[in-house]
Length: 199
Image 1 (tube, helix red, strand yellow):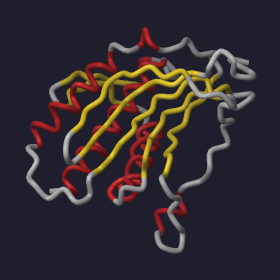
Image 2 (cartoon, rainbow, N blue to C red):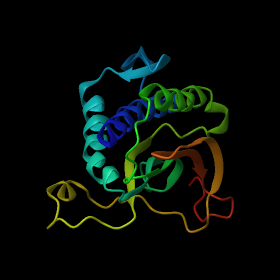
Image 3 (cartoon, helix red, strand yellow):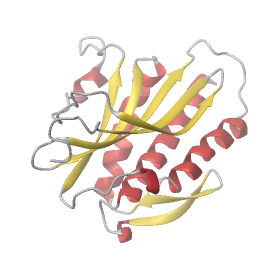
C-alpha cells in the first residue's frame, strides 16, 4: 500500500512539474498537449527529451522519497548567464513510512488534483522571467545518500545555481495533510534586499 502511495506521488510530481514548466512559458505552447489526469485538464510534454528529463528525475527521486530522505523538490528558474535564481516552485513533502492502513486512492487523488487545479491558475503569483532563463529540478535531502549504500545516489550531482543570501519571499499555493502524506506547494522569490536581485 505504501509503495502505491509513492507511485501516485511520483506520477503527480511529473504532471505538476510539467504544468509549472508550461505555466512559465519556457518553451512554445506547441511543445505541450492537453491531457486529462486525475480528472483535471493538464499539459503533457510532447518533446521526448523534455518528457525523459522530468520522468527520469522524478523516478530517480522515488527511492529516496520512499525512505523519507527527501525534504523538498523544487523547480528552479535561473538566469542563464549568471546562474542567479529568479524563482522557485517548491514541493515540501513528508511521507509517513510507518503508515500501514489502507488509503483510498480516490481520496489521495482528489487531494492531489486540487494542487493541479490551483497550479493552473497561479500565474498571477509568479514573476515574468527574462527570455534567456534556464530551469532545473532540484531535490533537497535531509541527509545526503551515500553512494556506497545506494547506486541511485551516484546519479545526483550538486546544483551549480547560486543560492540566495537572504531568506526568500514565500507565497503559499496549496497544502494538504494526511496521515500517509503531507504536501505543501509554495513559490519562492528573492527578497528585495537580495544582492544581484534580478541581475
